Image: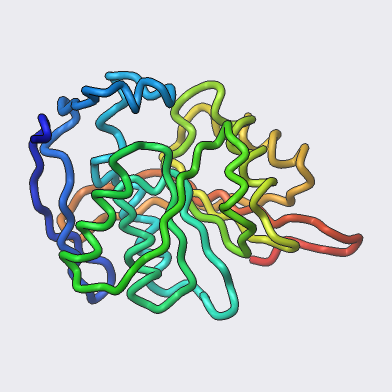
Length: 226
């Protein structure tokens, strides 16, 4: 039996309510076989995958109306996969990924709670090769830059899995590692733009952050679309 507690939340995205099973709080921990520890996930960060973070809500809101036609889409560091569920409901070609050993289980349960069909999921360890993951036209993520070594590792992972002309959209709650990530992506040949993601959710909670947008430059004359 799992040694962690959960709760159920209703998260409104656009005109749709999503029922989300998450960890009860950030104090939950259960790694009896050391699977998470073996992947470099400490006890302090173990529960991070299992929360509905504000940045994830912002990303899900963007995905509720984002142009999806013809794009193979990857969510990195998906956690509970709220944005992935939104894209999947809209019949986008969606793959969710995370390195946490319980992310797949929680995403599958949330898919069933919301009466959605099968959703593709792949392990996504940024520091590993992930040969079965493939390449994508749109790569999305939220609140990914909370540790100092993440910008370089994440930029390298994105480069390995970005198709020609790929778009990258990251929602960031003004983390201090944002400039380092921008430099790392520029080193990989990506053009960059940034805009405010500040908003107030329907429940009155205020959010402050930025949209980080990148486009892979594959030939002379490529430019970042707005």
